Amino acid sequence: MRSAAPIRTAKAGYLAISAAMCVLGVLLMAVPDFSAALLRVVSGVLLILFGGVRLAGYFSRDLYRLAFQYDLVSGILLVLLGGILLVRPGGLVAFLSVIVGIFTLAYGLFKIRIAIDAKRFGLGKWWLILAMAILAAACGLGVLLQPGEGPRLLMVHLGITLLAEGLLHFSTALTAVKIIKHQQPDVLEADYCIESEE
Image (cartoon, rainbow, N blue to C red; front, side, top):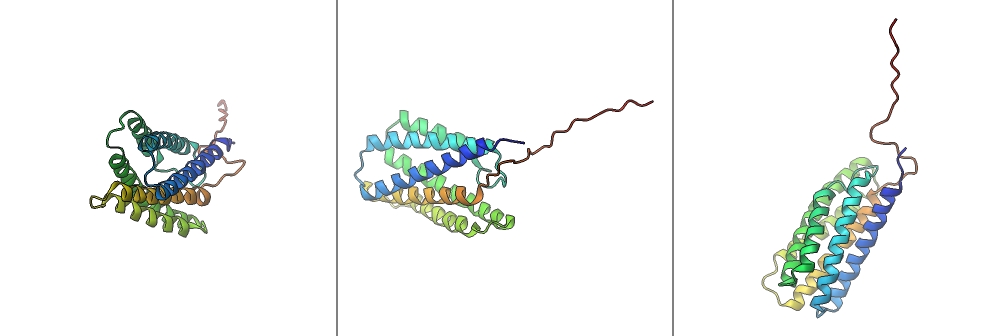
């Protein structure tokens, strides 16, 4: 039997990072003049942590294989982008907006597929994933289509998008990640006895 510790850790990390995204989103909406230098550090660290959590989720092999199925490549990209954000601060808000917009739109579209799969699996809250996925995709698209807005309005839109993405990941982790104590491995291990032929 496989230990449930990796998936339990991945789920807890997913929920914690999702909550942090929600908090950062609300902060940016409430204080659009938030320090750019501090935002750069917080965003870079958050991207690296979320990338690490996504990689851990991908390799945890949860029961339904829904929440983390697209997280290998996105986890690597998030870690790399977080590192770039920490070492190259120039054009922070515009760069961060484009990155968050692209990722939120992509995750929203991926999670729509996950919601359809969750319905097929018989998960009762599949509609919550679908609703949050549509909201997040719309917010991501909105950030990408911003028509040369000022920095304050851009920060508010960025905050709304981060909040929507945090809610999407939070709802997905709560509804689609199933932890059972004695999950069987994907490939059953068997001892083969070779009987000698007489």
